[in-house]
Amino acid sequence: MQTAELESLLKHHFGYDAFRPLQREIIDAVLDGRDALALLPTGGGKSLCYQLPALASNGVTLVISPLIALMKDQVDGLRANGIAATFLNSTLDASEAAACYDGLDRGAYRLLYVSPERAVMPSFLARMSRWNVERIAVDEAHCVSEWGHDFRPEYRRLHDVRERLPGTPVLALTATATTRVREDIERFLRLDDPRRFVGSFNRPNLTYRVFEKRDALKQLLSWCTARPSESGIIYAQSRNSAEELARKLVAAGIPARPYHAGLTAAQRARNQELFIRDEIRVICATVAFGMGINKPNVRYVVHYDVPKSIEGYYQETGRAGRDGLPSECVLFFNGGDAAKQRHFIRQIEDPEEREQADRLLRKMLDFAAEPHCRRASLLRYFGEEPGEGSTCGNCDNCLNPPDEIDATIPARKLLSCIYRIRAHSGFSCGAHHLVDVLLGNATDKVQAWGHDRLSTFGIGTEFGKDDWLALISDLLRRGYIEEGEHRTLQLASEGMAALRDERAIVYTRPRFLKKSAKRTRGSREAVESLSYEDALFERLRVLRKGLADEQGVPPYVIFSDATLRELSGRKPKTLQDFRATSGVGDVKLERYGEAFLAEITAYDAARTA
Image (cartoon, rainbow, N blue to C red; front, top):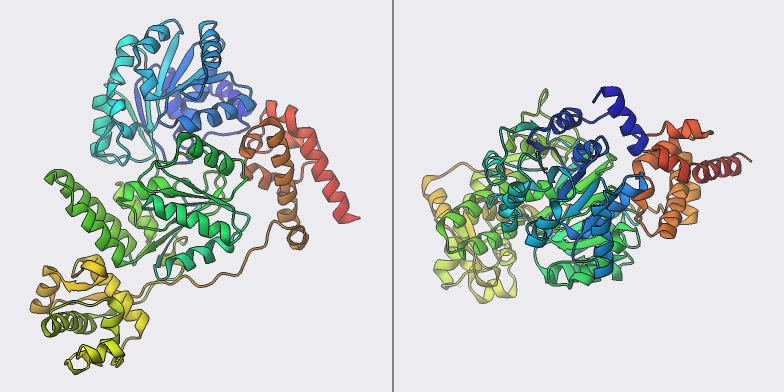
């Protein structure tokens, strides 16, 4: 198909004037009938790589997706753009499924979304042969590999689909995949001499930050209350933690809900629905439970606990800022998290699995303690050189380079103090007691246990309490010390070796989250005090929400925040000018153009009166 024809389809249905990097090349391979593997970052436009070819063909594009909760949203978005699409999954009742099958038999749809479990059912495979399936798109293809961060064994049965449709090209798509995972994707999906496309893993609109975890709940509440009108995802390690965080946020006046595998399917679906429709602002999810969110205006992702791997971290932070607008990724971390994760890893029985988990965790911990550009560190992990310059200018280390100091002597004092307390008392103590001894604080416990008579009592006055606690955190991360029962500290073999060999130790002073000035965007008074563009943007968001509620779809199905931002900046006066806005296709122009133009005109008149 000629470039002009594809660009016409792109603008007519999706409202875009140009392709993103690699999209055109992938689409060409798909239209040529080639198998292909596409690695594009979250928010990089993977879906368009099979949606546009579906519009340029007469048959059905079968899309296999692991996330049942997202299928309706994706189909709603396609229908809003005038594209005939449907889905088949367990949320449909018998009559709805029958109507869907009837439409497929009549050739009424261009795209069909199904889960991997549905795709390999014999009854489905038998009916599928009648639908003129022209291509198969396998989304989240890393799920086929046990070395991926979200292994789904059902993916390994997808070759059954290929056997029923011999010669039908397959497009495998993923946002993150190491070399080993890519090889698994090609092998298990039986890709035939595939074209390979690897996009940049760089997400320049995301700001990466790591804060030393100290009174984490207070830190989290400070972060979220400073952003009362912004959508965010908070990842926690346990179901109980996700539940507690949601309750605390609600108590602080922030609409939030939990999302984890312990909830019923109906509860998860309801909470996700509230989130994507902007009825609540924050969702608290377990890291272990893969949460698919097709919500482009997530303005921040917070990791309350350290992730198990960089792959998981990258995938989860990638859910922020999918509309291309500035968004923030925050990790609260201390060495206690590292010790906790290592404890879990030691419980893994299979040696190979245990070694793999430990390797992934070490890479993640190195990233958390990275003193240089975090973006460059992420890119190199995925095999991509960051390009010119050693700083990105949009992570905490680039914006405010950390202090690195020679902590060899303080670290030896700390390790020696842990050793002497154990030798003197026969038991270990926690971090705060240890710091009291180093600072010479003669507390009741210090005196009762005789620790004021140790040679290490009062030898640590060169550091304050915060620096001692942060150094303890750092040495926990490195494995020099370990946490025992009741969070007591003891020397690890690495710590003994560091004392014996007099190793040099460099300490990077961590950052602490300072109380942020509250952002009050959202109230009528706040809107009046905003700049012209921000105030108009808020008015357009209100209009969008009303239209979305009337139609029973998420607000982003109407227009993305990026489109509203452009509208509030350009302030178009005519439908022709309105159509020039990115994200405005012909169908949306016809449905919503007049309403948004009227709102812009009315607001402009009110402000200039």
